[in-house]
Image (cartoon, rainbow, N blue to C red; front, side):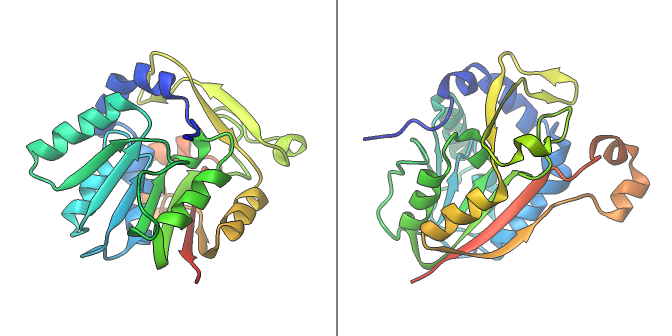
Length: 246
């Protein structure tokens, strides 16, 4: 039985907004920081089978396909975003399969992929462990995961860092997307939890963590563009890489 683990209705209501944000390159955290970190963690994807888990409107899957990944599958619970992803891939002549499905109940066979990329999806889940277990299930032995998430130690909400009294429990954050001064039609819910919860979930799934990175602006970015000094005042992101053990 499928476990609905993401707030489908809010993403459907925000679908047109989110397509515009992504396709107009308005999210500077992604375009100037986290996308590059995720792609670096993915490495050379030529000939690899790849799952983009929580693919949204499909941009990362398109980048991976353009980088030589074959086949590429994108999965998201929001049908409006999946349809937009399909249309764009078809228009660009990219061989990508997009499915409307829950990342905690993936429509893939055991060991079907070499790489799972989970870009800003684990924080959408109240309970991320089932999705992490699914990532491990669909990975071939030796396959890898690259998961980008909000920094569990520092991200409390957009405006305030996490209070230490709240850190060691799951925390529900409800707020509108607010990107480049454009506010989403409806709020969305994000969940943050202590780092040890994630490391425990990866280990329980048979995924050995190979790295934990904290993407942050370079010295040149901070020097040349005041936007970064104004908007990156504490660590905001964490990138976990892991390998499926035997």
